[in-house]
Image: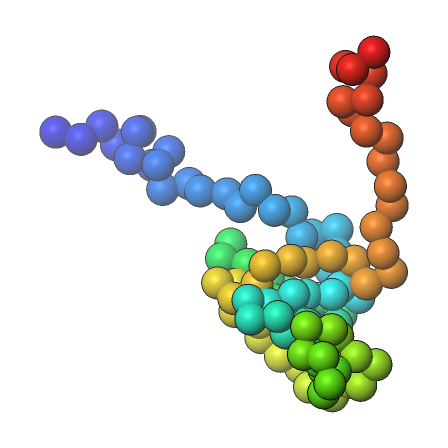
Length: 106
């Protein structure tokens, strides 16, 4: 017989990523394959599927496909599939924090 308490604890899985602080804020999303988009995060789920409003895709440079150019394309309201997302970051940049390992070398 399976212990019901253990079974319920196994079913409770939480995402290690907390996107709640980015709700209604502009985020930049990088996808597998190199595509990138920016939009306002309106929602997400435990699989990291994202709903972005006012999304804009940042197109690659025609001469050098490894570089994101200045050209963009409006996408509007999109659902970005979590399995294709590699990076989610605030669009206004990230703040630098002190290196917690810097004192370990001294």
